Amino acid sequence: MGSNPTLSAFMRNKNLIVGIVIIFISIAVVYYFLQSEKPASQRSSPQFNPSDFSATITNKYFALPVGRKFVYEAEKDDGIERVEIEIPGETKEIMGIKTLVYVDKVYQDGELVEYTRDYLAQDKEDNVWYFGEDVDNYEDGKLKNHAGAWIAGIDGAEPGIWLKANAKPGDSYRQEYYPDRAEDMADVVSVAETVVTKKATYQNCLQTLDYSPLEPGAKEHKYYCPEVAGLVLEVDLTSGERLELIEIVN
Image (tube, rainbow, N blue to C red; front, side):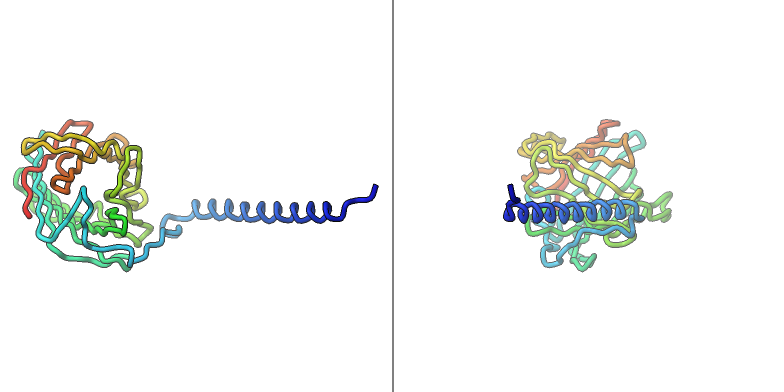
């Protein structure tokens, strides 16, 4: 019997399509491995459109109007830790995006040990993104170093999500990424927690598990509550120490 010209043409086209698909897959695989073997500073970073972000933070779990101040305290083995968060209204442009300056001051028994300026921005879906931090670490009243500082877009550092807007239990996300120096992660544990502190009882709070692959033994639970639109409690899962919100202004 003679061959069917229509069938033969179909098979040739099918083989051609399969070959093209295999070529594209091979290119993708090779590109992936080439990227993964590059130094972090040379890898492709996610693209961010400045028009998708705002320095106005209104996330229901974490709102930051200008002038707001949060004060926290924790009883530690070496004394009282006091953390003061302030929103002075300053901004800083990073990767073409206007970010809000979030000032974080840590005191140990009344002595300043850390002064940090975090840079945050909110996207169109109300997720709060973290674009880096400038850090001053102090010892005995004197500036010691800037360990922990990083800025997105510099030396391989990339933005991360500080807090999701529509968090669901099981969500996991990267909060910051500066290779081998800042790689904090967070998992969403619950969105219906009741939290009791010395100051008050809060309902329907978001609970996260925060950790870092760079510090395998360090984990903590954080609780963000809509009632104050902010963080109300941190619990160190190793020591059991609790950093509690004791005052909120504005």
